[in-house]
Image 1 (cartoon, rainbow, N blue to C red):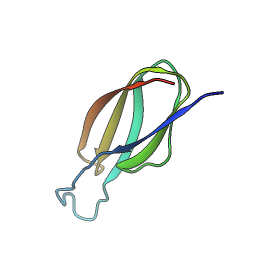
Image 2: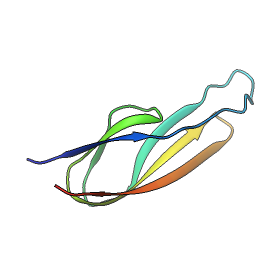
Image 3: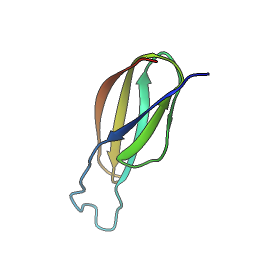
Length: 78
């Protein structure tokens, strides 16, 4: 059973509004040929892929009021 793991590093910053809120960052799979498992809900994480193929992954950051997202496409071969 083959898998591939890559390290991913994103970033997000908080504008301080609303006061007292905390920034939450998470990764998710938008599309791909298999399953992706993320090591943590932080901007820097590992991702393990169950199948080779082209995957679109999304990083999201929210402070409870505003949410920002960005996407990256990766090609997994093994």
